[in-house]
Image (cartoon, rainbow, N blue to C red; front, side, top):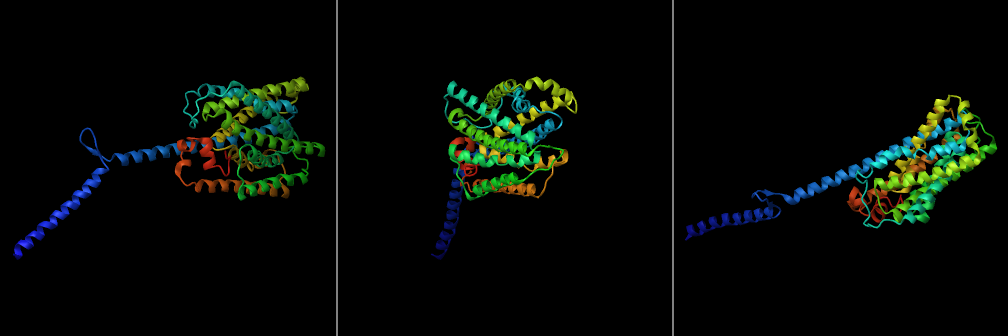
Length: 418
C-alpha cells in the first residue's frame, strides 16, 4: 500500500504545477488580443505606450511654441526700444511718427495671416461653435486698438525724455499693474510670492523718482521734461498692463477660440485701428509738416532714418506676436512676466550703445526688479509642480478647456484665474 500512496503523491504534484502554470497563462493571455491573422499582441500596452508618446510630443510642441514666443518677446522688445532711443538721439523729434512706428508694421504679418488657415492650431478650441457677433468683435478690436494707440504715444513721450536704462526699469511696473487689473477683471489670486513680487517691483520704480540722471549721450533734458517722461512711462506701463488683462478677458468672454488665426485676427485689426487713430493725431498735431525737414537733418542720413523707423516697426511686430502667443498658451500675466525678463538686457545694451550711467540707485532698482521677477516665477514653478495630475501638463489635455482648466490649473496662481 505504501507504493501506491507514494505514486499518488508524485502524480498530484505535477497536476498542481500544471494548474498553477495554466492560471498564469490565462492571466497573461487576458492582457492580450488576437489579431485577425491569429497572432497575439499586447494591445493595451501598445495603446498606452502610443498614448504616452503622443502626449509627450504634444507637450514638447507646446513648450517649443512657448520658447519661440519668449524669444520673440525678448528680441523684439530690446531691439525696438534701442532703435526708438536712437531715433531721438540722432535728430528725430516727432513723437507721433515714433508712435506710428510702434503699431504701423502690422502689414508684415499679412503673408503669415493668409497662411494661418493651413497651419495647425496652436491650441484647441473651446467647445462652442457659435461665432461671436460682429458687433462684439468690432467693439473688442476698436476699444483695444484705441488703448494701444494711447499707450504707444505715452511710451514714445517717455522714450524721448528718459535714458533707456531708466525707461526699462520704470517699465517693469507694468507687471504690478497687470496683476492689479487682473485681480478685478480675471480674478487673479494673490499669494505671498506674488505680493512680494509686486511690492519689490513697485519699490524698484519708486526709487527712480528720487533719481536725477546727469546729462549723458543718451539724453539731455530738463527736470520738467524728466518728470513728464517719468509720468508718461508709468502711465504707459499701466496702460500696457490693462491691455494685456483686457486681451485675456476678450479671449475668454468673446473670442472663445484659441488658434493662430484668432491671434492674428485680434492683432491685425487692433493695430489697424491704432494706426488710424495715430495718423489722425499726426495730422491734427501738424507734425507731418516737419517730417521732410527732419529726414534731411537726421545726423546719419536719410537712408538710416528710413531704416531705423522700418526696423522699429518690424521689431514691435515680432514683440506683439510673441506677446499674443504667450497670452494664448499661458496667460496675460505670464506674458508680462516674460517681457520683464528683458529688463536687464536693455540697460546693459544702453550702457554699450548710449553710454547711460548705472549708479548705485539704478543698480538697486535693477536688483529689486529682478528679485520681484524671480519671486513671481518661483510661484509659477510651485503651481506647476503641485499640479495633482498630468491633465494640466500636456498640450491638448491642458488646453481641452483652456479657460476653465488650463490657466486655472497649472498657471492659475501666477497667471489669470477664471
